[in-house]
Length: 409
Image (cartoon, rainbow, N blue to C red; front, top):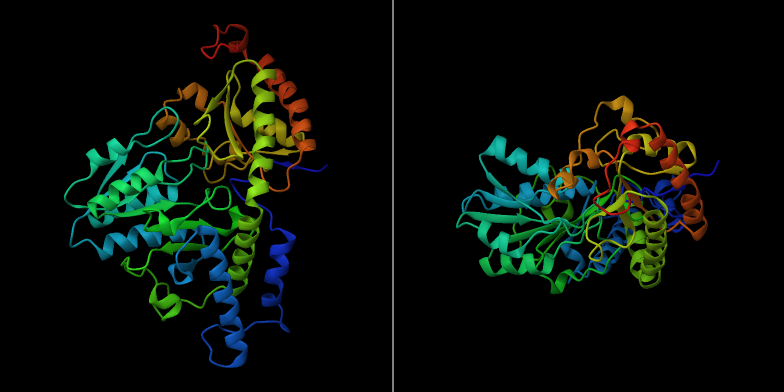
């Protein structure tokens, strides 16, 4: 049975074009050189690395390719930005501002600095649609604030943050501004050279490159403390022989995203909208989480009242749909490991936007991508209403329900 994959915010398959770009660097008779070596084999690898850097810079709208540092993941890039900035500028202060809806790569890094190194962290609230207010940021900034980290777009609900406004506040106060752009890159236009963003993290496996490669944009002149030591790689910013196959793959994926985004983004958005509208109109007692318009075009997060999200995703998995309940480790819908993992913690994002606890557990994220089609949406709109109806018939709460506050029940 072919799986309909609606979990692209978790990871994406490697596109054939990306695999082919990486292939020469994985073969014994190919380009296996160390890019730091001076001989011809090494210099060919170096040239490939720099060509990939140019492509990443082009997707992000960076002023220069030298502002791109290759990392092992988006998580490492976030850590490099946050810990690197905190250690490099701690003589000025030890206060960091972030938001309540950040990815754990940011939240846990801030917690580490708080618990282990005496930094103070302010976590800004968000509105019901998941957006941070520039006014709240202004009020949170103190004389000892050295860094603000607010994501570009949320991985669970897709809400796009007003990074231009938030970054402008930081620029006025001469505070570094970092954004986790892992979900935004390749899905929305970025122009970092003309924006008040000092650092931005991306991840390869979110844009059809393999896992194990990411990048951090560091605006020229921004000073960071290096986290890895042992060589002068990446202009002394990240020690360790570069992952040339991964970088080549990331470069190819960024190039595809940049060239195809004008057509691909509206195509995927149209599929998402049809799926979303079909579910909202065809299934009672369902409502949307996140911003209705300022949202990634591939993402919809829906609450199905009187249904356990884990039960729904497992039922859909059996019908050939791979979805996701949350971004907690171990909660992989397609494997059914959520019930066995014991990690059924409520989503911190849905809690932050004020979704009631009983509704959080009935929420499911749909995230579409390059390989999805109208046929996938047709299948979903046929199967999802039946699956929800079957699960609700097993719930005594469904029979005894009060009228839905959303007006759909």
